[in-house]
Length: 373
Image 1 (cartoon, rainbow, N blue to C red):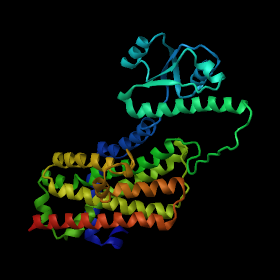
Image 2: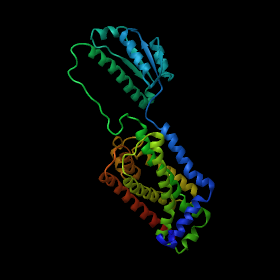
Image 3: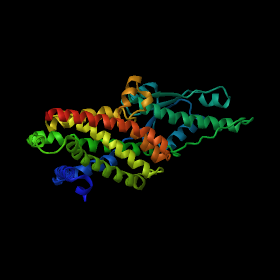
Image 4: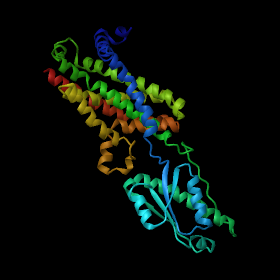
């Protein structure tokens, strides 16, 4: 069947490459288990949420309103423990030894100022060594203090003249898993597929079969196509597994169309395989190919938009990110998972990946052909 569809020579090299990847039981296990473990570990560990924090309280007031704020802090699901502090030195020591990530201070006339509407001030000291976590904790504390202030103003006449209503689209509960899990589909599929294809030609060189490949009747495009099919199939299998696990285990819905997801996934895997093939053609050993793949994975990860929004990085890196297929497929994956991205938007982020695939595969073909000559 495969030979009838693809031709006997192309079918033969595809079967040969699949056999090279799957014949070792440990290799078969490594294709499935590490990506699965990575999905579970990163799914629960790779989060920007800050929970179970310890907050210090230096309360010189002891009045009604300082007590109310402290009680609300203690009742927050993100706060693990409240540490009572008795002096400025104790506060400095608690921050310095990382006993607390933030310390809230109330002066001796805080509640009196609140009751007299004189504009009381809540002082907070944060541990700047954990800048991201400190900013998030600052948001928690600000919301709690604002909530108490809102209750005070509501209880006093006249009532506020206006109000606000907040609605969050696409992620109503602001659950970080709804962002991280679709992104991990991209990152882990990229790593698993690149790891397979980057070893293909380098393996031939290291095992001494590269010369046999050079004198074989296969055309260059048949060799490259045969070597790129296994990583594409591995990526498709992993992505399908993740697609099924996300709603079942992590509760992340897939609201888009599979008819849009899989063609875009295929183009992404071709672009990734083209990059991996370039590494494999240049490398002389599997170790070099692995190091090349590892060196490339880090910038691809950082320029994908997963670790930080693309808009936050310098302009010259934003231009470089356009050549990163993970950046484009990340937009597609998040859009199809969370908001049912329409076909026009999917295509707008798929054609750049097609261009990357054509350029990288053509470059790998040229380098491979030049070595044959």
